[in-house]
Length: 143
Image (cartoon, rainbow, N blue to C red):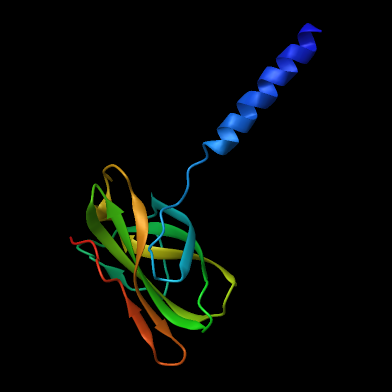
């Protein structure tokens, strides 16, 4: 009987933890669903992605996972890393991103984004579409 009570308590705690799971902030109107935004140090990165700002040779990686939810394929997406209410870095991903395709990328940023402040998250700043149309964030954060 006591074992069943402990199992019930453990199950309830697990369900509460699942319900309180962290949700990734989204950029309204961008039609890009960001499911991962994980900045971490990495000193020997090599990639074709542009890094801004870049005041030193050391780099940071912004591990991203996202998907295009627009009806049209996207050809370039610019992401901003926001920490403490300020834009601390930019990363751009170029390619052909079909609707619903899950994209996993490591974008290179400057190591100087660290230490990060509170409420660190990613925002979509610009989306270019294969048909030539573009979406720009109407209220972008500032550096």
